Image (cartoon, rainbow, N blue to C red; front, side, top):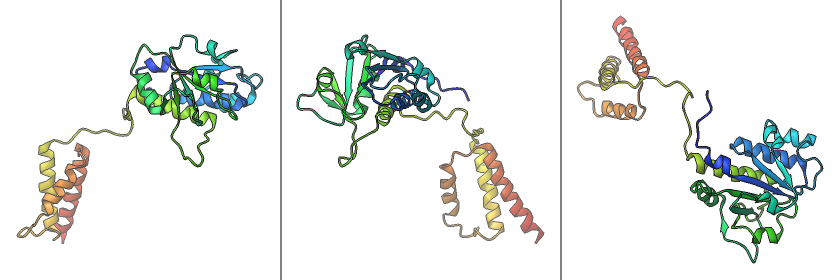
Amino acid sequence: MNPTEINTTLFKRLRFVLVETSRAGNVGSVARAMKTMGFSDLVLVTPRCADPLTDAEAVAFASGAGDVLAGARIVGSIQEALEGCNFAAAVSARLREFSPPVWTPRAFASHAAGQAELRPALILGNERVGLPNEIVEGCNVLINIPSNPDYSSLNLSQAAQVLAYEARLAATGDTVDERGVGFHGDAASVTQIDGMYAHLEEALVAVGFLNANNPKKLMPRLKRLFSRTQLETEEVNILRGIARAILDQTAKK
């Protein structure tokens, strides 16, 4: 099956920024989360782990997203990380007294996807201490992922996955592409379906399931049932084959 053709505008515009990440494995996991949703722009600000782009754990956790990992950039400041961006969103479970407006991931994704001129960045902090206040206060919005208030701590890559998923959904729409999935036959015509009903009714009468003199509402109910199935030609033929077999068996008795 060919990959789904999608509007790649947001996929090229959105940047993920990791600040002072401690574990190389988390860098690899974020790269994987990004790639599964179609994103690739990853920047690391002063990571605390050595060789985060080539560390064995990072490569293993990237699991097929090695290209995103290899293409990531390491910079020395948040200002350098945000070069070319005109909208910055800090991601944190902890709300601050002096905070920019608080948005959900979905609100951010909708805003970012709907404005082609926007060059947004999602900024995620250190696994243990999160983002410094000065970075949060300098952002346009603070993204807070709705979660269990009794346990709201998400792993770094889990948070990145939620954000990337919402961004993808906003960019592509809330639909599932079914092209090439499963068998899709030709829709049965009205004439074919009417013939099937007549054949089926004849078979039901033959086996005594339907009283021709007092049919009640059996056939209307069957028609209502089948009308919800969007019958295909082959399915009509199968049902008529069943009716034919019933009639053949009753004729032999």
